[in-house]
Length: 222
Image (cartoon, rainbow, N blue to C red; front, side):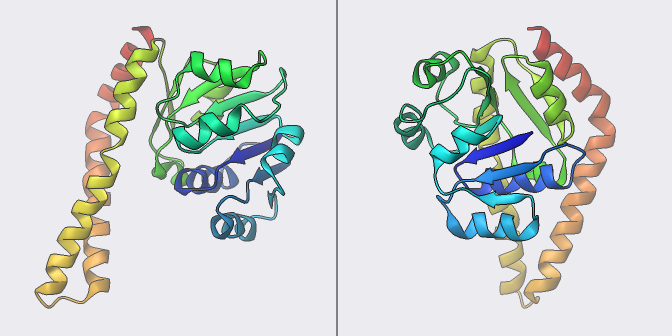
């Protein structure tokens, strides 16, 4: 199986990193040259990752294609590409709905929206998908925990909550910088908060693991 990524930002870097250390079987991962420095890092980290010459090359040669660009760029870009009906297309584009994607892609391919977050690089975290799809579910279960959504309107809520990642990291950065201003060296600050957050998250994970599974089932059935 050949995987192709159109758009080479933070999410692509995280997803590809997770795939390369997972049990997912693939022959090649093609990444677009849009962000060349990120593409080169990925290619350097794994010999199966190659930098495509263009987005057209990705669409022509890959079985699964991941759309990882902004809504404005995506809607202009997608309609210029010639997808195939036997391809699986997974969109990470936040505000482009499934009906809109179908209209832009034009062929009757398998199209699924997904919401991966940076921890996917560690094969951790929830990955909401819409509509439910067995193959895509199994794929992301190797990179985290897939949550299938049967109502696209509900997926908007997941997109909104995923935006909390940025202020969360900024909160950690602010605390670390405060300690530095108080005279603590930067490296110990970073280490302290890394350990603190890892322990906190692990504690929550153990406590709420059963509740999360129940929550996932409720979302899937709604």
